Image 1 (spheres, rainbow, N blue to C red):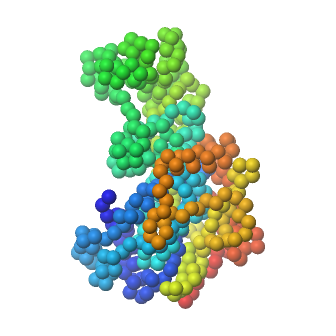
Image 2: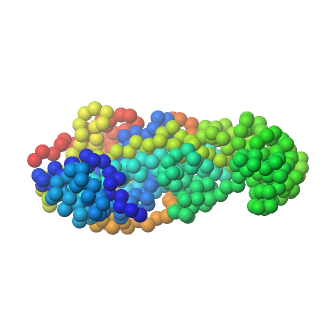
Image 3: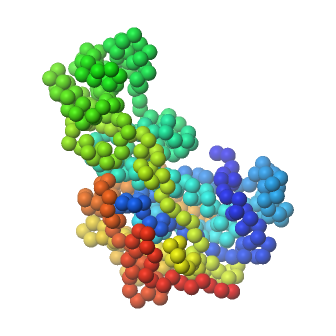
Length: 453
């Protein structure tokens, strides 16, 4: 992987330059990544992108070409260029496991290091987690809507080529069966699959010839696309081409539910009761839910999954929540006050309170809380002394996601809009009791006052 150091914003370098000049860059600090609220109507979010971020962190180095660019454009001083030449993050990071659910104010990532080291990671962190978590959150809703039916990710042609690779990984991570994107298969070892498009049928002299050619190449268990012309005739020709070993048919247009019902009758009448029916064409979680009663075995989803199905970013922000006033001092809470962008100061630890295996609420307390946590710990070590210590695979993340989604009741897992599945309860040091946080609102608990020198 090439250097990721310039996957950042100009102002992070200018802040660094000024902070190194006046000495504040050496202050120990803590940043948290969190979402102020879930997208409208979403009942939970899903964390994704952790391993991609850890890979990118390893390559966050300023080499000759990166330093030359900063020098040529007078972005920072000569002294800061020398500092950047030796840059490596040496702090600690804790975060929610990949595949975990998150809610408003969940401390999904806590980055601890000097201000100079940690501030540079803002844009890289947000760009990866905002994208991948948005895809995973949308895809998870589709998985719940589909139930035990197959879900295939077909969205590569509807987004940036690199975003397509990351989107495929995020979709498979939460339960999609596979992707059409071969680069995702190479890079992340996710399952890939595909058969043919309408162009393959149209390049042949007739549909029957096209089906014969596909069967000859891929075998009788292949899935044939039957809606290029007349669907009923397409199904008949598919049966003629593959016989009783026909693996499946795909319908990509029309009234998908009605067409699937008619095709099922046609297949069953021919004795092909085990032949699958796959549908595709502008599907999202709501349309998948609408089709739940129809004889459909799988769904191909494109645009809606790779664009977050209406919420293309998870809404994460990366904010300074604690800092020391001297290089060796203790961290003290800091917060932005007032307005709809007020923050909750201080590092926070998070637990999910469970009763009988069912999630009831997310509880945030001050970092280092030693009392009764009454729940499942949500944060895990990701980086220690600058070195990644988490090497979980997407398969492990998928297993974790499947376990934690079962902590929610069935009625809140699916695509129907509503309030967050569970409330977030925040206990702050000066708070005599808990305060509940809902999307789009600020805490009723006074935030810690800004520390002054």
